[in-house]
Length: 628
Image (cartoon, rainbow, N blue to C red; front, side, top):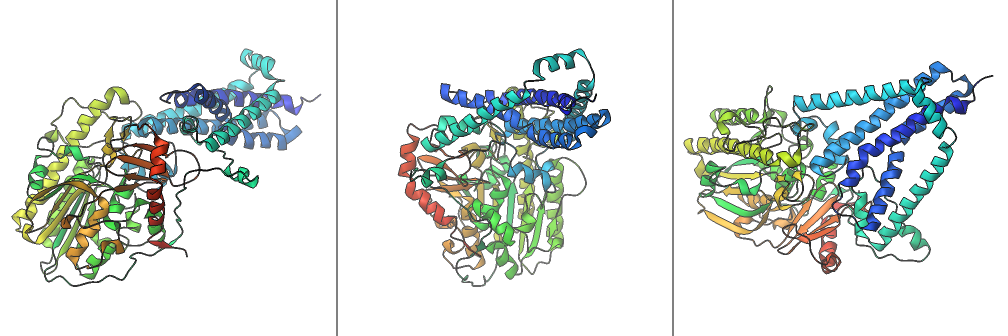
C-alpha cells in the first residue's frame, strides 16, 4: 500500500514551519528597533512580525508545494529529495534577502528598495558604496553558510530520526489549523492598518516602516464608495513618463566678450562643518579669498540628486523624467554652444548614478575620463588631479575651458594615505559585516576626517596649479559637495536616509575674478548654482525660466529650501522642516520637525499651517514637465 501524498509531503511542511521560525529570528531585530511602543503599536508590531514571518516563506512555499501536488502519486523518494533541495535553495534565498535587508537597515535606516536595486544592477553601483574585498568575502561566507545550512536541514528532515518523529507527532495533523490561524492574524493586521490609516494614527502606522517589504492596506477608496469621505493630506505625485518643458521659455543669449574658464570641483560626502583651518586648511584659506556660503544645502541627501540639482537647478523629483528624456542641462548645452573645451573626470563612475544619461549625455566620450587601474579612492583622486594638470598642459589656449572633477576620498569606506592622518585613533578595518556601529562610530568619524584632510590636499593642488599658470584672473571656480554625511548624531550613519542637517548641508565656495571676498550667511541651495553660472555665459533670462534657483552673486535672499529623493520631498524654512511622501503607499515620509531635526509639539497644526506650501510644491513639481 502506497503512502498517502499528504504524508509524503510532511518533510516539506516541517521545513516551512522551521523556515517560518528562522524568518522570525531574522526579523526580530526589526521588531526591537522601534524606539518606543505604545500598547497599541506593540500589538500591531507583533501582528506584523508573526504574519510577515510566514508571508516571507511564500516565494519558496508556493512553487515547491505546487510541484509536489502536480507530481502526485509519482512523487517518490528521489522526487522528494529534489523538491526539498529546491525548497531549501529558495528558503536560503529568503533568509539571505532578510539578512541583507537588516544589514542595510542597521547601517542606513532604509530597506531594500528601488535605490538599493538600482545600486545592485547599475555598473559601478556596489563599489560606489565602498564595499572592499574583505566585506564582500565576509558576506560571501555568510551566504555560503546559509545555503549549506538549509540543504543540511532539508537532508536531515528526510531521515527517519528522532527530531523528524517528534515533528510528526506534534504537527502532522495541525498544519491546516495553523494556516487558518495565520489567515486570521493576517486579516487582523490588514484591517488594523486600514483603520489606523483612516484615523491617521502615526504611532501605529510608523511601526510598519520597520519591517521589510511591508505592503500597506488602505480603505480610503472603499469608504468613498459607501459615501464616506476621509480627509487625508494632499498626495504628491510626479509623472515619470511626462515630456519635459525645459527651459520654459526660449533663452535670451549674448556672447561674452571674454568667456571665463570654469572649474567645477565636487567632493563626495563633504559635510559643511569640516571646512575649517584644522581639517581643511587649504580650502579655508581659499574660501577667505572667495565667496563663502556658510548656510548652503544640497538638493538632497544622495549623490544622484546632489549632482542633478546643482547642474539643472530643478527639484530632485525631476530626475526620473530627465533620465527618461535623456535631457542635457541648459548649462552644459550653453557651454557646448560657446565651444568650450570640456574636461569631465571622476574618481568613481559615470554610469552610477546615470550621469552619462543625464548631465553628460551629450558630452563626447573623448572628453570624459574615468579612473584608471585599481586602488583606493584617494589614489584615484590623485590620478584625477594628475589628469587635470595634463589637460591644462596640453589644451589649446585660444578657447575657454570647462573642467569638472568628482572626488571620491570622503566616500565610505573613507580613503586616505598615511600622510593625511590627523585624527587618531581611527577604525583601520571598516568592514560592514563585522563592525559594531554604536561602538565604532567615533573611530569611523575619525577615519572620515582623515579622508577629508586628504581631499583638502587634492583640491589645494588644483587651486595652486591654476594660480601658477596665472589662470585665476580668467577662471570662475565652484567647489562644493554632493551631500553631507551623518555619524549617528541623530540616529543614522551615512547619507540617503534622512534630510537631516548633517546629511544635506555642504560647503560652497565660489570664486569670480575681480569680486571682493565675502561671507554669505543666508540660506543657499544647489538649486541656485545654474542661476549663478549661466549669467556669466551670456544668458539674460529670469532664472525661473530654467530653474528654481536665484543668482547667488546678486545677493538674492532665499527663505526656504526644497530637497528630494526617491519617494519624498522635503521643505525647510527658518522654523520647520516638513517631509512629504511622493507616493500614496505607506506612511514612510510624513514628518514635521524644527529646522534642526528636533521634534515639535503639534505636527498636525503645523502641517495644516503649511497646506498652501504643499499645494505650491505640487504645482512646481510639474512646472517643467508636460503630458506626452
